Image (cartoon, rainbow, N blue to C red; front, side):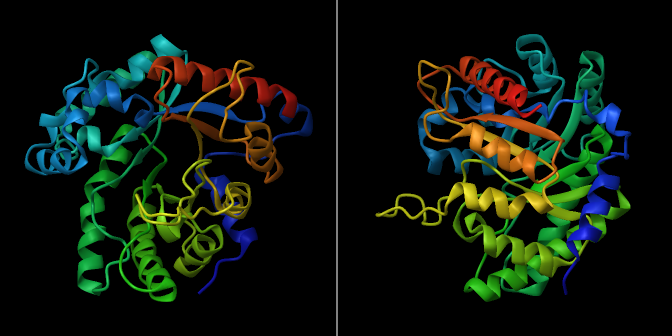
Length: 327
């Protein structure tokens, strides 16, 4: 099974609500738009929970998801924060901040109302902790599809255009690709009924191998299935393994961009000139623009030296500066 790049691109444009514009109209539009990924504020939402270590954090999260929300910020206020503190009008949610709320209609209505009141567009929900899309057993994979269903339905209620899922599981390179592709096709069928897309992010392991992930997307063979290239997630080796193995980040983004319906501008730290110290943003955004992408690029700050607020603002400033050079 394979989907032609031309067919995919046509469907991606339609799914994103983009229409062909006269050349004179396009000339005044920015090269891309800027959104804010909620993970940029994860320390402010989780607060003291992060000091317990990831193993205990995971246990507490499993037992009572809301119990780990010990920070000064309330996830319900995310849209308000994006607009008020950063003058950003589009956001990307993370399901771990709402894990017990997916089927809570009252809560989701409040979340949407907050966004509407702030004049903020809800773009997607990033879905974690909902099962291995590459599980060896077909029945288990069907259950994984069902565990994603509430988040697809929540995304539709919020007015999002997509959910982001992960590609991991069991088997060697070929086996895992086949299993993930099977799950993605099923998710694509579900997403189509809700007018959503299902996007796979390079998020560690084989999913950070651009060529492998492209093969998975093409094998999934569904026009609702695409990618969310992340500038920073290209570690191939397991966390903590030595020596670390990484995929070439610029090659990986270039490989994933033809299938992209969202982009994540990961950032960690900045020098005195305002340049990101790990990633060449100029080079990355030239790759993004060169692929014909003009949608949202989401700020995802993960640094420690700057505060979350300062890191978000530094990333935004850099994106705006590079965008001006792209014309």
